[in-house]
Length: 377
Image (cartoon, rainbow, N blue to C red):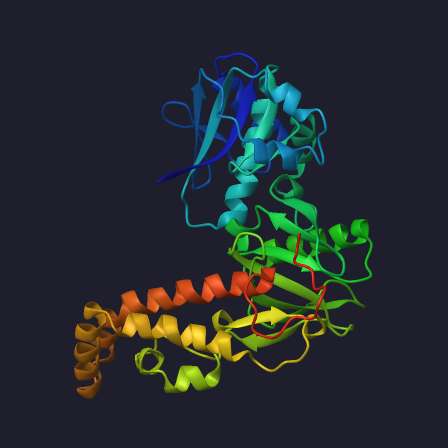
C-alpha cells in the first residue's frame, strides 16, 4: 500500500522528466540503486516511490504555514502563488520509517533539482520547507546519524508553561510513536531547542521502543529521564523529558486512586481480565506539587470518578456483559472475558485521557490549587 509522504508545490504544472530524475538521483546518491518503475514511479531497493502530478493547488493549511514561518518567514507568500503540485508516495516496505524517510527525502531533492517551478515542499502534510534548503540538506539523506537531515522531518516549536519556556516537536510521531514535550526550567530557549533536536535525532536513530521512565545519555555529561505522558495541548501521546541531574518540579500521581481501582466493581473486573492496570503510565499524570495547597486528594474529584464509573455499571449493556465476563473468568476463559469487556475498557481509556488532559491544563483539579495558580497558555 502506498502512503503519501510529501508534496512538491509548483508555480505551474510542469511535466515530470523521469529519465532525467533517475540520472540526477544516481549522481546525487551513487551508493543507491535507482531504477525507473512502472508508470511514474522510481524503485530504490525494496521501495517504490510513486509520483503524481496534480494540476491544482494543495488546499490551504494555515496552521502548517504558521509553524513554517518560524524558519521561513516569506514562505506563505510564495506558497499562495502555487497552482500545481507533485504528490510523492512510498510503498509500505518493511524497512522502517527512517529508511522510508531517507528515500523519500532523496527523491524530493531530485525533483527539486529538475523542477525550476518548485516553490515549497510539504512533508507528511505537517511541515512546510523552503525548496533551496531541502535541495541542499537532502544530499545527506543517507548519511549516518546524526548527519541525516532529520530537521526536514520535524518541527520544534516553543511554548510557555507555568514556570518556564518549553519546546515540543511536530512530526516525530511516525518515527517513535510519540512527540516530545519538554520544559526544563532555567534553560534558555535556543539551548532547549538544541537539546530537543539532539534527543529527537537519537530517538529516530535507535529505532526501539522508548520505555516509560527510561534514562538515556545525550552526551558524556548529560542524562535525561523520559516519561510517557499525554500532551497538554492536544491529548496525543508524548515523551515528557527532564534532566536527571536536577530535581523535577513534577511528581506523578494516579488518576484513579488505588482504592477506587481496587474497590469499584467495574475496574476490579477489568483488572481481573487484564484490561486495566492501576500502576500503568496511562493511569498516571504529572503535576507540580508547588501549584497546590497540599497533596491531599479532593473528595469531590474521587467522587466524580466513582460517579462516571457507576453510570457505566448501570447500563443494560454492561449488566449483560458483566455476568458473561464473570462466567468466562470462572471457567478460566480469560480471552472470552476480555472480548466481552473490551468496549468498556475503551470507555475507561477515554476517561483517563480526558482526565489527564484536564488535570495537566488546570481545568480539572485532583488537589486544592493555590490562589493565583495560572493555567498553561
